[in-house]
Image 1 (cartoon, one colour):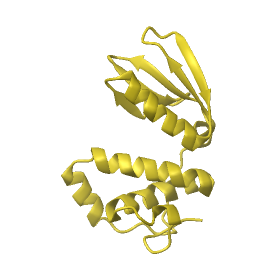
Image 2: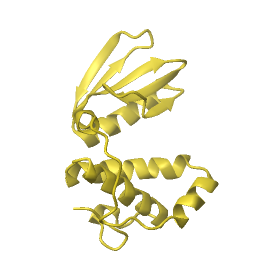
Image 3: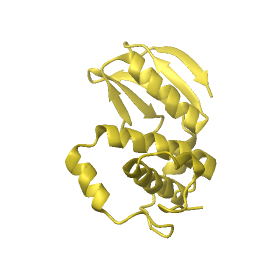
Length: 148
């Protein structure tokens, strides 16, 4: 069930207003893509927190001035989203940095300078998606797989 700033999951109750607004916006988009509530909520919260940490002040100010998310908002549909929901999460070294990417995704969701940071993020994403995490060595060879 979609949410708004007055009717949202209890897990979002203690989030700061901007983080909550972003989590609701992301969560509604995930629900629109067919994600079940129990999977959309932790993903939305995690991505919203990450966005707030990485967005510059100009982006935050612009988003805070946008209309609050509504239950009937329409979102662009991505036909590959359902496949990516269940896709294995990979941690690999590409182009001078460590990346976290769902298998089959065109772009990495995160980039890190250190493998340990990428593995931690990969674990978080795989746990939220209830899927596997495949970790590779710097030379591209398979290291290990963890199931969540």
